[in-house]
Amino acid sequence: MALFGKKKQPEAKAETPPVYSENDMSAYIHMISDSLGKITEVLRDDGAHGLNVDLLVISPDEGRDFFTLVTVGAGAYRMPVPPRYGSLNRAEFALRLPRSQVPAGEALRRSWPVGMLRNLARLAYSHRSWVGMYHDIDFGAPFSEETKLCAVLTDVFDEGAEPLTLEGGDRLVLYNAIPLYRPEIEYIEAEGPEALLELMSDDMIYGPVDIKRDCVVK
Image (cartoon, rainbow, N blue to C red):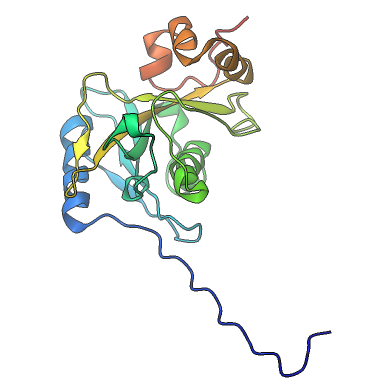
């Protein structure tokens, strides 16, 4: 039983998640539009999970027969990266998907690619940690009933693409979220991420996600 007359302690104020400055947001949106294509839709976050992460949708056009989903919000958080990473302390994430894997309307907002990208984008902020090149993240269960893919390996989204320099000098990297099977994650633990990528084709790494692809680890 609480003591009568005990002084009530003030409630801790909820932390306000970081957001991009207007200039940094504009620079990032221009980078995505210039390098990946016209943004055709924005899936707004409901703001109920801390860091706000919207999803940019880039639809197929004459030169691309696939959709691209890109996070916007993760890079507002300055990650506590190791010294060797220097100013490479901001990150966003993207995924290419075939037309057949992108439902229309409200179903897209509830689809596994959107949920997975948002969870990945919030990871560093929620754990006050960092996500960088060749990090593997095991989500614990398959992304959907249609696949056994259950994990992600990060790699640069496009080879040769330069990081975006933000107002304060921090640099933002757009990472490719490569879906993996559990045996592939276990292979990374034994042999390292670069060894796994050697076993994967360019289509598996950079192409639209094939949720029925073969596991490269036998």
